[in-house]
Image: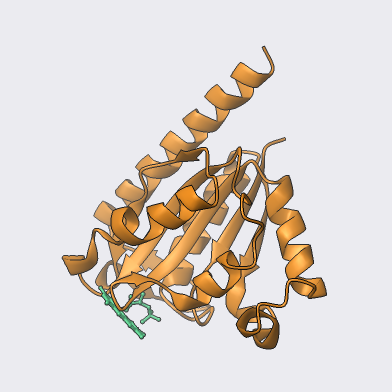
Length: 183
Ligand SMILES: Cc1cc2nc3c(=O)[nH]c(=O)nc-3n(C[C@H](O)[C@H](O)[C@H](O)COP(=O)(O)O)c2cc1C
């Protein structure tokens, strides 16, 4: 079974970003991936801020990342970049922590003004971490995600279509990769 890790870079589970996470999780479940979600803001803040590489929680998170073939990054746009919350954890990964992995970025911003965050801010870091394949991600605007009752989120059909497309491309990429290494 294909293993995935989702890194959630939001500051709360109540954020509309969780709508993107729910979508990614539902897709992975429907496509028989085994996955774990790491909520970075729920890791010990002291360890993140002090770059405590010896932290048990950080080492556990890193072990999950190590085992995964696929990483989905779910982050809000903060100040024209991905969140600092996410960065505190990325800094604690080994230097080539994403080597051999396929990475899919899913980003939520307040406007389309920062559409290039994926290319200009996120991709250089993912490359530095050794990501083998960085997939075309999706940039969604927060007005396209609505908080509904019972901690559910409604995603605008156009945005949902875009998410479906990048998730499907990710699935195809993963099956191509698995069949090539099993040949
Ligand atoms: C500190 C902070 C900085 C932000 N900076 C930007 C920004 O530079 N560009 C942008 O498009 N949205 C920006 N936003 C908007 C968030 O990306 C967006 O509203 C958020 O992902 C939606 O989450 P919410 O449901 O928690 O509000 C910012 C939000 C916060 C809290």
